[in-house]
Image (cartoon, rainbow, N blue to C red):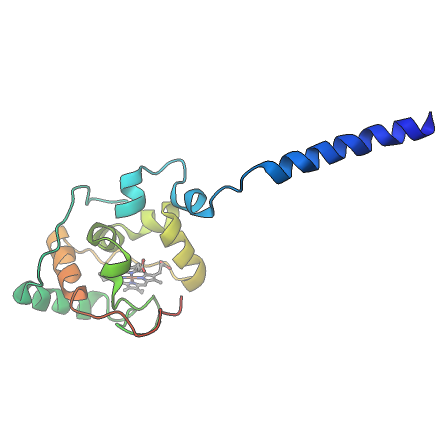
Amino acid sequence: MRRATRLVPLSLLLIILAACGERPATPPATAAAAPSDLTPWQVEHGIGPVTAPITLGPVDAKEAHEGKEVFDQKCGACHKPNERYVGPALGGVVERRTAEYVMNMALNPAEMIRRHPEAKKLFATYLVEMPNQGLTPEQARRVVEYLGTLPAPPAPPAK
Ligand code: HEC
């Protein structure tokens, strides 16, 4: 009698363990990239006023120059092209993020940090909340143009 009562739970445990082992692991990318309240567009392009696709053509030198002026005034205190500073290095950012994402981060940082998984991750690392610098969408677009002229740092930026 005693033996039987002990064996039943043990075999149940084995069944449970076997079931767990068979279940395919959830791909971590899906879990991180698709939180329930974001649309696929928002995951890819960020959350904010930019909701239509931006096409990046060859760099427009005049726009890039204007973008650099905005950047130097409103972003350069925290971001450098090639090294981690108050915020992440932004050289090559347009290769790792979409133009829309960069613009939405610039135009709507508080909501991005609160809701977007990538921005949340960066916030968890940098522990400074990127402020809204009051750019117009046009200025943000020019900053993207300028950022497009900055090559990615030789090594992946320290996050
Ligand atoms: C007070 C410092 C500060 C200023 C000013 C600032 N940022 Fe940031 N930025 C940050 C920090 C810190 C992060 C990382 C996320 C966080 O902690 O908020 C960040 C993140 C970003 C990201 C995301 C990078 C990535 O790899 O996803 C972009 C893009 C960005 N900033 C662009 C800008 C632009 C453009 C401006 C100027 C309009 C600007 N930032 C001004 C501090 C700043």
